[in-house]
Image 1 (cartoon, helix red, strand yellow):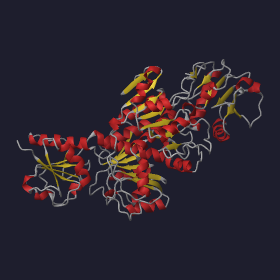
Image 2 (cartoon, rainbow over the protein chains, first blue to last red):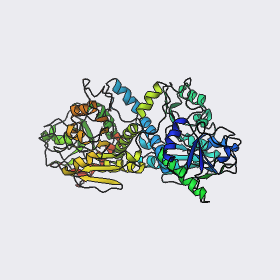
Image 3 (cartoon, rainbow over the protein chains, first blue to last red):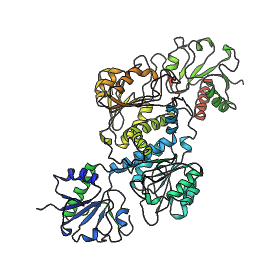
Amino acid sequence: MTKPNLLMIVPEKWSSLWTAGLDNSPVRPLVHGQDRYTPGSIDYVLSFRPPPGLLKTLPNLKAVFSLGAGVDGFLADPDYPKQVPLVRFVDNTLSAEMAQFVLLHVLMHHRHQRLFDAAQAQRKWRQMVLPRRTEDTRIGFLGFGEIGRVTARHFVDLGFPVSAWSRTRKDAPGLKSFAGEGELETFLAQTDILVCLLSLTRQTAGILNAKTFAALPKNAFVINVARGGHLIEKDLIAALDAGHLCGAVLDVFEIEPLPDSSPLWRHPKVTVTPHIAAISQPAVAVQYVIDGIAKFERGEKPDNIVDVETAY
Amino acid sequence: MTKPNLLMIVPEKWSSLWTAGLDNSPVRPLVHGQDRYTPGSIDYVLSFRPPPGLLKTLPNLKAVFSLGAGVDGFLADPDYPKQVPLVRFVDNTLSAEMAQFVLLHVLMHHRHQRLFDAAQAQRKWRQMVLPRRTEDTRIGFLGFGEIGRVTARHFVDLGFPVSAWSRTRKDAPGLKSFAGEGELETFLAQTDILVCLLSLTRQTAGILNAKTFAALPKNAFVINVARGGHLIEKDLIAALDAGHLCGAVLDVFEIEPLPDSSPLWRHPKVTVTPHIAAISQPAVAVQYVIDGIAKFERGEKPDNIVDVETAY
């Protein structure tokens, strides 16, 4: 039996991590821009953001696998072949990684660790009661899927008041749920630390804008771990410089890698991380593709096929 | 009815936070070193580490309240009047605060946040897969009481393997329990991040020493949030400089505030915080004392009276 061909359209540094895991698998990996292939020979694609128009040139494509939980990189392709199933990468590892990142940065802010770091550099013993109590520090999630659910649980357990805003009303232990356009402003007004976990769609693009920031209480803090397209960067900088927001953590950017010229790198109130909040462990991700392909080959369908029309 | 007199033997900055909360309470606060009082008039004492010999000069003392969860500051007084009940401060706020601190610093280490901070300072986009997977990063607690239990739960939930070493065997979800002197070395050999939560007793003083560090795997990380007396500072510095340990977070010190001359302040692998892992919120702590005194006055006993002989 011939192995199905998997075309990997990923940055070079990632492809080498992946091909190693696929070498002795029931799948034959081919790397776009490196290996030669004929379009008709490609059965499956693995990518994060394929060049627009490329997928439609593959006439025998059976399915496309997303390297991440978000699939906006595919939906941005106006020529995405809509009859080809698109599979989202959903795994516990990824949710747990994201929860770790959000916990780390909320706690670093809440507990003033950067202030203690600065005090240490000056050999200053700066003991103090934390100025804002945990039970008075309201965490608000913009978007509330699996990652939100896993993350929120930790904050509830640590004693933070937790709320979320999403399309439909959600139910989770300790969660205050806000739903739909009409409740966005009320949600924002009661959020001290805003965590953006939305998927990027036409509706959510640019949602982190001047109006949103103005609706947050003074001294609010913003964390974006979703997509760069959610954020209007100049609005964030203006809100920080005006002293309305007290800080931000950004893991995702409109252009990645973040260009050298970006003012975000050096802004004293901004933490920049290089899209590492939740990087798939190669071994886990390789297994997700192998399992998914095996299901398609048996005529079954894997979980987490995305509705390409609505992006959910 | 006259109010019982509470003598507060605490640093000046703390006493002012506390007296405010006690002003309209059924207790009359007196501040040692500030207010005048006759020894016979003192009914209760609130302190963290009273000057040795002071408590025995108070002939009508009914009980002593500890400002912290640890009571070593009292047991260090050879003249502690053993017939006087000693009450430990145990509250959920404190455990949750400590859990936050430990979570923050484990995650900061595990997720290489200081490396990303350094990369940001150089405007470098340093994307990488985390070198050690969460499921391969073993957290070990030295000491496992209420704070350990609350803290461990988060790490189990985040996917870390979690173990604890304590006097007696413990049972908690996902916990590997090691007990007694004989199992200490086995416990250490399987611990990548060691978190000291022990109370300070004759048995545990100096437990973070060269022998303990040598028993940890290479590149282990150490967090001490218990007491300065647990750590032999020169042994830690030697283990860090030899490259056997990769870093440490210290919140407690033999002498506090940490003297300006301490090499710990400037050690590149050491994070120093000023004993802030779990600072009692004044309002919560004031209530604990008011409630405790009310119980004694009614002839009842509050929870968490310490056995002064064994310190548990």
